[in-house]
Amino acid sequence: MLVSRKCQEEQLQNVYATPVMGSVASDEPIPQYTLPENPLAPEIAYRLIKDDLIDEGNARQNLATFCQSYMEPEAVKLMAETLEKNAIDKSEYPQTADLENRCVNIIADLWHAADQDDFIGTSTVGSSEACMLGGMALKFAWRKRAAEKGLDIQARKPNLVISSGYQVCWEKFCVYWDIEMRLVPLDKNHMSLNLGRVLEFVDDYTIGVVAIMGITYTGKYDDVEGLNNLLEEYNNSHDLPVYIHVDGASGGMFAPFIYPDLKWDFRLKNVISINTSGHKYGLVYPGVGWILWKDKQYLPTELIFNVSYLGGSMPTMAINFSRSASQIIGQYYNFLRYGRQGYISIHQRTRDVAVYIAAEIEKTGLFEIYNDGKNIPIVCWTLRETANKPWSLYDLADRVRMNGWQVPAYPLPENMADCIIQRVVVRQDFNMQIATQFINDFNQAIKELDAAKLLVHGEDTGNKGPSGFIH
Ligand SMILES: *Cc1c(COP(=O)(O)O)cnc(C)c1O
Image (cartoon, rainbow, N blue to C red; front, side, top):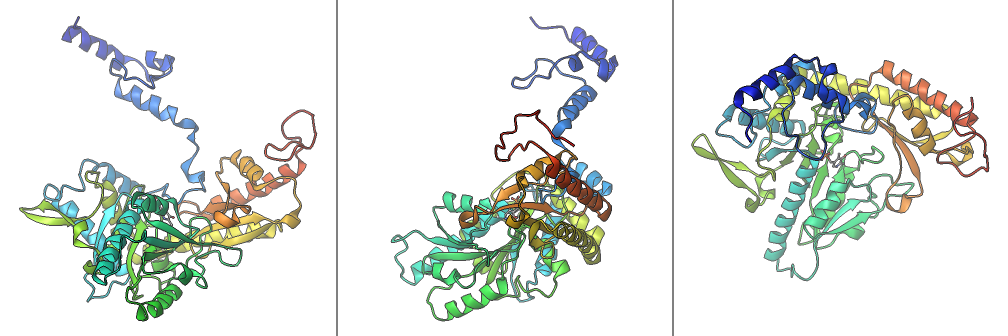
């Protein structure tokens, strides 16, 4: 039986008059797996969901992520006010489309696309989508070149060459597109792409080599200039050229400001496409990414589609169709608001904090620093065997978590998997004051672990005493 409209309204009004904390809805667990029958007052729904998320930890103490956990209130306001704009609707929101285009141009300039270069690029949801596009372009372009040169392209699987410190999106790309992933192993002396070995993995079926600017595990930059020179030699003596895509998810928006003289971008002849995550050192909330090709010739036309735009048409090459344009607008806000000098000052300060943290961790004498925060502002270290501690980095991670810090410990990839490292990613909202607090807590955690009798991840010491820490 249908409840009368009037009765329904009265019920709703009662709900509105109820204090949130005294509401019936607050008196019971919220429905989780089925759609609730009746509406809730908005402020009650807001509070219930907000509180449901309460135990997730403070994003700013999450030192595991590269993703931004702070934006200026004006940026947040602007983004909240533009959530309804659909980034793909170029003709409905032509001004928004223009902002995206401005961002692509600004990034092309940051990455030194030359005047004569006919660059093309797009925003994406993040670097994963951008890498997918970069990889697809490599594959399509290789196939065309290879067929023209008369290579039997069916004879073998095409391959992609990358260091074993790759981010998982490249594995996805290779699985989705049936590409053989050729991993140049990292080792103790080569914590980024090993230039001494990379050419062993390259042949006529290589669609490209990916250089990583900011290996996710360790923060190291691949030597892109060295790779460019190697491939230049290779290309001069082979029929089928091999080009470089740079995965600059983190470094692509960091190096241009802090290492303006480091050549890793379109200044290098064989670098033909680059991706970055706007939501990492582009300083935007997730998710926005970017990919640019140095020249249209490297983006096969099959991958370009047209959408209508102001009565005409506009090229699009992103995989996703509809999504909010607010992140793109947030990116443009940052560019306009900070300018080059603003990005330099933020990144420089962020780097100072990383260098400070690395120095303090080194001072304990217990750890070997693998990355000292200078490339991208991440610090990573391993526990020295000579430290001779009964606890591991996993115990330390648990212990600093008690002060809210999320500092993950994890194994390195592939043939270095027996090496456990711990990593801190420093972001703009982690200032020197917070860093000193973190270091205090970190040192205190070490003291407590040293004094502890029972270790959650430790070896069984046979101690049958009361569980917990004994101070
Ligand atoms: C973070 C990261 C990615 C994935 O980027 P998303 O923007 O999170 O999709 C890819 N490659 C590298 C090197 C990364 O650090």
